[in-house]
Amino acid sequence: MKKIPVLLSLFTVVTLGLAGCGSSQASQSASSSSKNQSKISEDEGVIKTARNLNEDGHYQDSNKALNGIQITDLSKRGFGSLKAEYFQIQKSNDAFLLKQGKKQNQAAANNGSSNMATNDSFSNYSKFVGDYSFYNYDSKRPQSDLVIDSDGTVVQENNDGSSYHGVATISATNQSGILSYDVTSGTNDTKSINANVKIDVTWSNGENETYYGYTSYDGGAVLTDGKSYKGDLVNEVWVQ
Image (cartoon, rainbow, N blue to C red; front, side):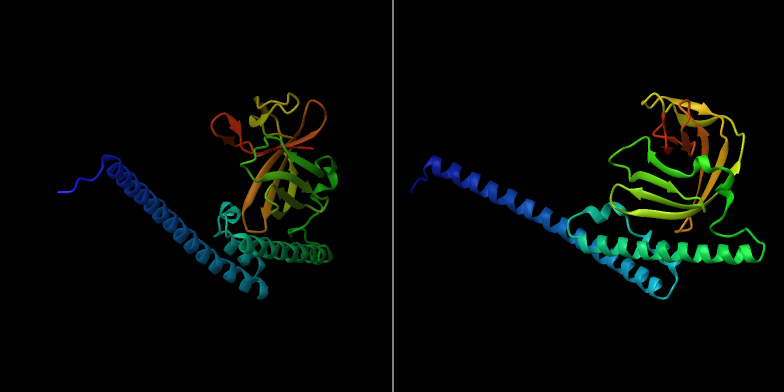
């Protein structure tokens, strides 16, 4: 019986082993690609629904439909065209919603009513109008800049190029024990503050958010939502 050299036998085993490894990697890659394609197809359906609602003039419903897509997905490979259309639809929705709000506000002013989208509540609180930066910046979080206009319109600019639009009303408050940062220290040291104002924001997707405003030691305006984040941090703090 002819014997197979030991060296050749080892080479055959290693070759078969590598082939098996390559087959496993190919299988995993195919599975990942299949899941990715399935998610793309699912998000394409959401985009189509949002686009149809936008074209029919249902801008708020269109934004709510867009909430069905995870923003983090849009940064993945293969989602480029979806990302572009997502932000295009969102921008169109928000532009029309704010335009509608301004028209409603004008009509309300003519009728002696003030319970409308945009408003003049900031006329006595001009200190809190302007541009804010996200204090607790984190590249893994979307927040970047916040702009509050004198008519109450609010725009939040995000690190991924997206933006959120809404309308806010401001009112006086003396609520104490609100969680914030010591923004003059340049650290994440937390403290309790006494709020001077409360700002209620209604975003274009229908969500509501409340910020508490006060003046820091250096005289600048600060906004905080007062919520804890990851145990010992504050969820959102904005500084002018």
